[in-house]
Image (cartoon, rainbow, N blue to C red):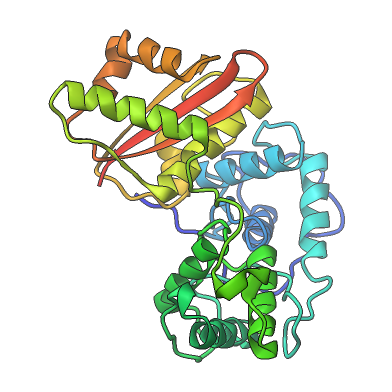
Length: 338
């Protein structure tokens, strides 16, 4: 099952000014719960890691998970209960969504994330910029798209291509960074310059979130060497799964836990679903160590971890390695069969 993130623009919402007087939690029902769900959906425009919710006024597990992610993001107590502190922060964030929105008919960022399902003048401006860059800078290999103001799969694919070439996180969403980079590249095109200041129009930049860092590359190579030693085909590095694995590793380090179950994202499978990863079967290995080779050796000496590494059904992987003062580094490897 896949959790769909809906970044379509919604009118700014403000919760009732006053806290309703009693906490809301799993099992609660009514208009106050519906307002929470609507507000979380609005906030997800800015923070797409918050899953889109049915606004049915029923506080179920989906609402619980969204509240947990919101609480973690804003440093609130992660109890999945909407008490005064969480209510007030939701009110503040919903209210702020209506500020600084100068995207309609203007050149500034519209104030909300654009993605599949979005429509309007802001999407049309993105499409015009993409086509302008495509026409003048063939090095970007951008496909020409319809300029219809509707953010469909064609626009998403063009955005991803641009993000990869520009060194941005290729998530297919147009947030502040992607909006500004598109505007900069299109402006350079209009003035005869080169996008990003790169000679000859060659795109460049820092590696995106779905590219392996040196530690992750070493672990990836070591894992595939183990598979080769056992007569198995190598795993492919999946860019989107790579992003999820690194996010999980960062979460473990930041929140000082060591578990397959995250207090923010839930189980590895919940997390994959939230990030839109499609799979038939999946698994996860985690480790804490100071050396990459030692982490892989420890996995190979553990029957459960070894079984994941040598599972002939798995064909793709994502690896996250980040610094952690407890061990030196924390490791997350996610496996899927597509």
